[in-house]
Length: 203
Image (cartoon, rainbow, N blue to C red):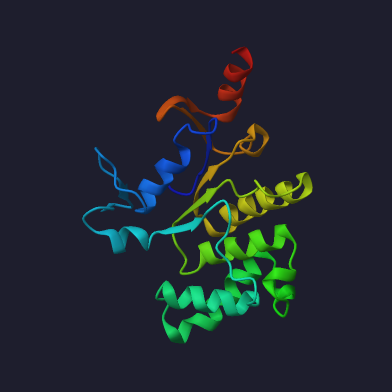
């Protein structure tokens, strides 16, 4: 995976996309092979490897009775963001994802799109080099989906982060730098979006 690029991971349900990401993030142990994150082996140096990654699962694990700053402060403590930097870090990620004006609302009163942004903010805490987004638009309407994907690209350009985007929708990966298509646990296509999508249409 090339640094600072956006990668789209496509494939049907059960293709192995989420399983692969769970192995990269250390939630699952691979039965064979090696996962290295910025040079750190996820099995041998899990803390160092995980510190390089921000992860947004399909359903963000947010606490509905907290406000965004409360939740992000709690998450930042779990991520071991230095206490003296935590308040500024929470403000930074809220600004990046456009939720600063929602700071006084309970998360349960936010739209699905804004809840997703709170989860996205959490993934960005601690300034990780790699962001993994697992079906970040699955629960959203078409407008919300476009909004989230636009935010991903803006952050990639502004922060230079590497993005692994798992999606069912080809149009969400059309502007990625590279697209990887999986099926039955194997990579079946790997290339630039234009090339991949032209091959998919031919199938």
